[in-house]
Every structure is written in structure tokens, then in C-alpha cells.
Image (cartoon, rainbow over the protein chains, first blue to last red):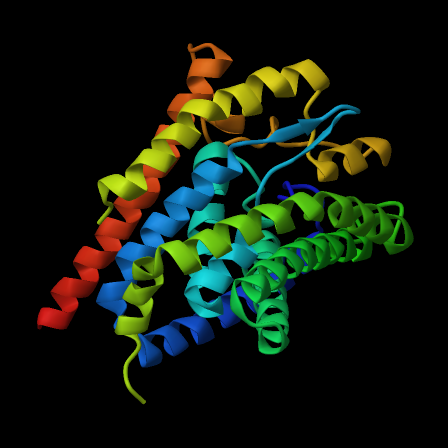
Length: 219
Length: 97
């Protein structure tokens, strides 16, 4: 889903950068206001390193495409959406600058798709499901649906951005269905990995999330 | 910052990554969905014309792809940890003032 340079025109690049920077400033203020930052930085860093490595495991599918875990929804479910956005931002920044995975001009769009849209869609769906379905079954179902929907909507967002960019000759009527349907299919694996890992972390290793909970200042 | 318990699964994933990212990818012809869509729609891939890093596509110059991929994984992991350490250090220094 990493959009390379050359797919978006300068207006879309600037627009997505503006939205992403504005959100990251807002998220930074929320994190500073609500968390003990010195407690959450180490956890976020380890999480980002883990997501980066997990993304390197491409799962090739006969026929010429592949998928890899993205991790936005999982980060949001475990750490909360504002911290998760910074986790994904760090991963995407290193991927773009060091390994040219995703463009520099399109970094704003990639963070918007995988660090904001995937994160928030995954998080909100997880919260909605766990409100009605309790226990570990709720965690598993919520994380699965959150992981699947997060990656599907993020893929659709990427398709929309590319389709509306004047540099793309075929328009949104082609790019949106292609990207959305592909990611809806691949999202099943994202949902399954998110569900298994989230359930494992939240039930077997509560000390991991406890670092964040301890870090939350009493309001 | 990182415990042994957290480090072990990460090392295992890095060790396995060339199998998935290089060997199996070459076996079936790896492309991300966006690359496939771009190819179908005849979009021009300008990544190699405008490139700023020797480690493009998780390779290391002079090394076989399998080894380079694993080393790229270690590099990315260490860079992210380094950035985290740096941010933590700056934050702690500022909050002590």
C-alpha cells in the first residue's frame, strides 16, 4: 500500500502532507496531555521495531501479488490511536528514507492511509465490537474486524487519492475498486494476525499494556 | 529499552524474513497490490530514476539478496531503536531542566 513517488500530483502530495502534519501536531498535544511521555516512548519504540520487522515478512500469493502485515489496527488496539499513529509514522519514515519503500513526496499520503485511517478505523471498530461482545471472544472478534476494516478502508483511501490525482490517467472509477477489493481480500490475513496477536498481548502479557495504563495521568 | 523477551521474537522474524521476502517472492513473482495495479494501468515507476538510498527495496550493495534482506531488517530495527533512544534521551534531558 506504500504509494511510490510519481503516483500523486504536487497538489495531492501537499494536501496529504498538510492533513498528516496537522493531525500529528494534534496527536502530540493529546499524548503530552494524557500520558507520561517518558514511560510510553520505550514501549512505542519497541512496538515500532516489531511492526517494521513484521512488515518484512511478505506473503507471496501465486498469481503475482503478495501481502504483508501492516499493523496500524494492532498498534491502536494495544497502545491507543494517538500513540499508534506515531508508531506507524516512525515505521513509514524509516521505510521511506532508508529503504525507499514508499516515496518522499507521498510520505504524507502513506502516513495518512496507514498511520491515521488504518489506525482509527481499526481502533473504532474494535471498541464498538468489544462494547457488545465481552471477554476474549470480543477481543478476538473486534481485533479481527478492526484489522480487516482498517486495511480495507486504508486501501480504498489510497485508491481514492491516486484516482483523484490528475497524474493518474484512468480515474477513481478504476483505482478505487481495484485497491478496495484487493485490500478487502488481503485484509482477511491482516485481521487474523491482528486478532491472534492482540488477543495474545492483551490476555497473556498485560504488563505490556500496563506500561501505558500506568503512564496515563489521572484526570 | 528492549527486553530479552521482546528481542527473541524480533530476531526470529528477521531470520525468517529472507525466506518470505526474497525466496518465496522470487518463486511466485512478488508485487504489492499497488504495484500490480500500477503495472496494469501502465503507470511509470520512477523509483530507480529518483533514488536517494543504496538500500532500495531492502537490499545491501554487494551482498546476495537473501543476506542483504536480513541485514536490512537488522538495520531498520536498529535505526528505529536508535531514534527511540534519541527521543527518550532528549525528552529526559528537557524534563530534568
